Image (cartoon, rainbow, N blue to C red; front, top):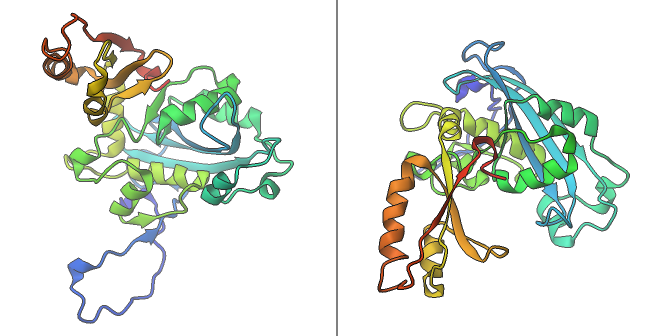
Length: 299
């Protein structure tokens, strides 16, 4: 990732007397550098936009965006990040007090956003012609961004958390800050701009097979995907479904999950054995499979 134009900065050496080298890990502050990365043709390829929002809560119908950040970048057919654009960050006054827990988490206060607004026209232009809009936890960001910026239409979204199998590539978990620290950096977590830069830095990482994380994301994005709903699953199986990464939909009152086409046969067999076997579900129910629009699977 050295060639991805990341400023490692200087750091005075600390004393490590009597400390084994494998007992020490040094993390550098992430500073993403605008311009060519030194990898591939910086003027060729496709444009994507990494985006992040801070909000007053979790309900897109009731809560509002208080900070929006985005940065466009170019990538080639192999998923190599070739050029990084400038960082855009806006704050926005939600018109009501920011909850105290949100202020503690983000550092944003009523005073720091007072009278400020997102540049709707510019943000819309920057997002509307991007081939992909990428967020870490895209299902959350998507609903807030598309409500706040309706002019972007229905762009293709990808998720750097869900569309890359980080654990299979030697990373523990999927949280942004934890992934970043395993790659050797730290950043100002829960700052929209810092989180955008963290996403791009991670997308440039080479994974176990030598390909970039962006290459893995593009492969997952191109693959057909499904939503499977465990219709009629017995209530006693809720913990089993949660461990299998199913989520409860309170409106439909059903456990469901998304998965790529390559995992469909395995999931069908698991459901038949664990959820729909006659001894646990004697009523003849079966799962519901819905094909997902490739660019809208996180909606």
